[in-house]
Length: 92
Image (cartoon, rainbow, N blue to C red; front, top):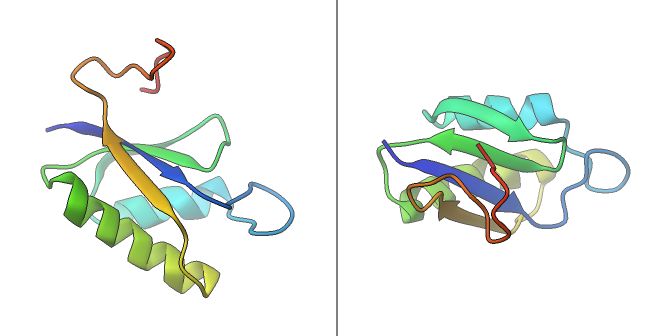
């Protein structure tokens, strides 16, 4: 099952657009994702899913919109098989 990272736009762990990491993790679990975890209290989510990027993005975006009361930008990418970001840092 592929590992994904979801990068959220305009979501903060405090202040305007606040989204507690526990809530974000719960959204991922409710969407049926496996091994869901947040990444360094950044507002980003790492998880596994048998689905492709498009349905994964839609499932998370719809839950975030309900929570925030407005659309939240979501960018979902796979780990490229090695679980490393563009700078070589691990996100898993």
